[in-house]
Structures are given as C-alpha cells and as structure tokens.
Image 1 (spheres, rainbow, N blue to C red):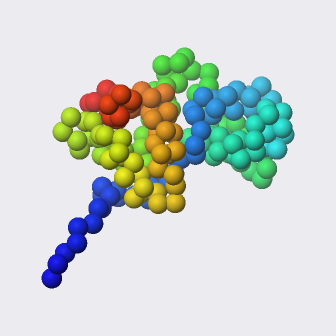
Image 2: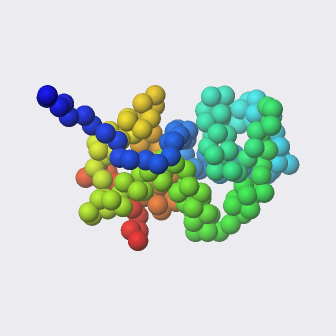
Image 3: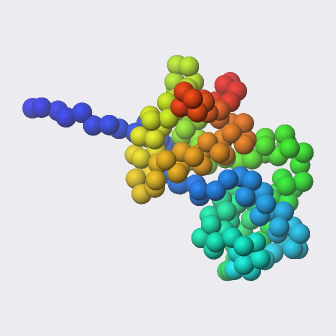
Length: 173
C-alpha cells in the first residue's frame, strides 16, 4: 500500500478561533471613546460619529470583546471595568496586561507553543502561514498573520524580522 504524505497542523488541544483584523491601537481608541461617552454607546452611533465603516468597527468591537474589555448587549457597546482599568495603566503595564490576555486566546497560545517547540524559538513566516491556513481554513492566512504580528509586537509577546520574514518570541523564557 502506498501512503501519501499529508501536511498536518501542529497538534492543538483546543479550538482555535480567528482574531479580528484590526490593530490593538484601534481597540484602545474604542475604549477611550467609550470612556469619554459614559461607558456605553450604540454601535451604529459610534460608527457614524467616528467615521468608521460599520464592518471595520464591528471587528474592533469583537477584538475588544475577545479581550474582555467590552460587552455587547443588544446593539450597545459597554465598557467593562477591565477595559477602563487597562486603559488607565502606564504603557508598559498596559502592554503586559494585554499580553497576558492575548496569551490565553487559543490562536496566540497555539503560536506561542509552536515557537517554543522550535530549536531557536523562531519560525519562518511561510511556515506559520501554512499553519494558519490549516487551523483556520475559512480565513485569509496573510491577513491573520498581519494581525497576529501587530498584536504580538504591540504587547511584546512576539518579534518579527521583516527582512528575514521570521517570527520569534520577543523575550524567550
């Protein structure tokens, strides 16, 4: 019997969920806006007042929700205590707080595990793109990669060398 070789994703013990394609700075901007407006605002009004496309704003709201910074009862976006307190932290503490939150998201946990399994703690972009395509077949791997790098760099969880196209842990432990 001839066995054909198939590419398998790295073993992941949990369901990986995609993260919205938006930058962390957009999430922090949403938190500030909500705080300025009393902590609660209809999503449609936010889109209109901030001149943001509705779909783009929904991605930002979803990201903030994944990080437990906001909740979305009905059509409102409500700032949670964790969002307000994180927003008020000094920059390094803010980064550390968000880093600990994203490390708990299955996608970031899987990537961090993958990086820790590498001999030098580095992973070529094309290898991670393949993994992303296997883990999240309905998502655009390139867009997901850009978002992972954005969030990872902001929180100093990941470093990315664009010249070498190599992702690594920012400070391997």
